[in-house]
Image (cartoon, rainbow, N blue to C red; front, side, top):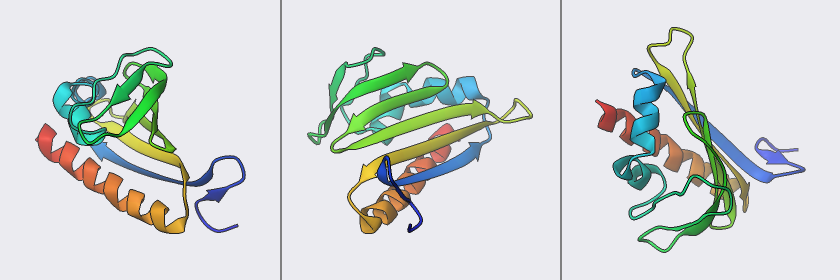
Length: 129
């Protein structure tokens, strides 16, 4: 089976980065309007309850599949499922942020989304300073 292809979730990808900020700082940013606009899309607002819908200014729609403050947010994102996870690094002074997306169409979309989420991690790191 090719890298990134699974039986259960089809094509998927994941990217992560350890950021030089503690988990609570990263959590507050990614759940703020500015942070949501960076990773989910401008105009997005998430209600932290399963099944709550959202819509971005660009017209992407989805619903919340799981919301565990400070740990994990899982949403549908168009035809895919997107999960953003946060964990403190071993030293407690930094945090690891991970994006995982599944149900991608094919290997090409997998690579496009990998590049997209790496760029989003760059933007989040820059916004945090």
